[in-house]
Image 1: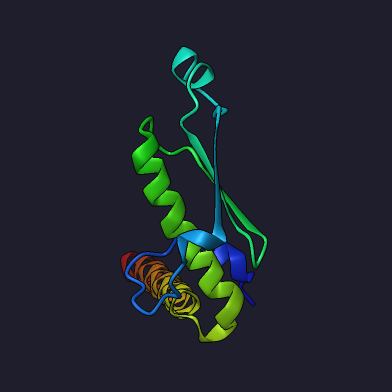
Image 2: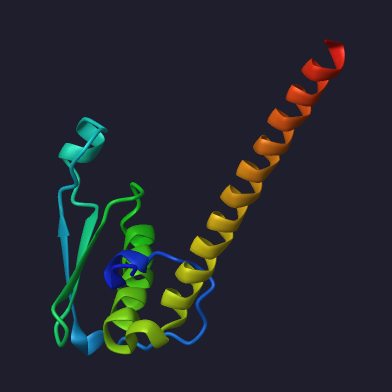
Length: 128
């Protein structure tokens, strides 16, 4: 059970819903976090809202307003796709696949560690 909106921010999603500009509200605000004067005096943080669904995205990953606008739109598009399609969304499917790969990798590492431990025990017994 992956929370749907947390599965967003995955790349390589092909079949995402289109977002018409008429459905978006965009604001530029001062960012927060580390960065001092570069952050505190410039309005380069983008707040993007999809009006029909009410989903809001805040993006302050770079110092460039244009890059932040682009990134915010990508993230919002993925979240809106998840909101409307749910488990049928490509973003959700990618997230589930990556979790499955991660679990398989962890399982293999654990099995390998057990084999090494058994091998060391066998060597200890051979020495005695």
